[in-house]
Image 1: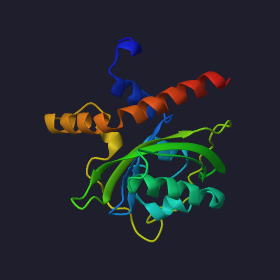
Image 2: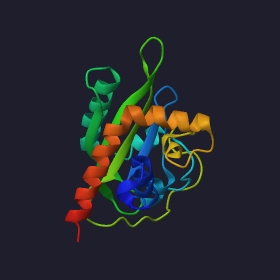
Image 3: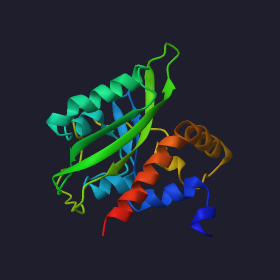
Length: 195
């Protein structure tokens, strides 16, 4: 099938499987985040299929970039901004700091309006290729072990196993389609600019 005639989610899935587009699923109430395995492997982190504590990822953001990133996230979670978007340096496991561009959106709130779940994308804007080195020890990372998540965002991008999963994918993609479109377009521009 010609890529231009594939459904958008299939094109995104190819970018995800290649490790070019990172998807994340943040459960604010659990303080847990789940990244697609290919993205974690690209950055050199072990346990690619397991969720991590948010602390583990926050401590990898460059100290000079952390406040702006967290402010952007809080402003969106609090309703002051329609979406989350930030650029920051993230320390990989082997390639040093890498410049990231992240976008996200709250897709679930509790009845009182508190943000519960946020999903998004991440692109590596660094000119040099990553050189992951699995140097982190296995086991808990951060003050808490990441809890398992029910059907993380990246798993919704695979061919649905049943109608319920297909419906959930359509619901979530309907909420974040514009974020995925913007990230895919930015990735295409990066591909063109790189030799």
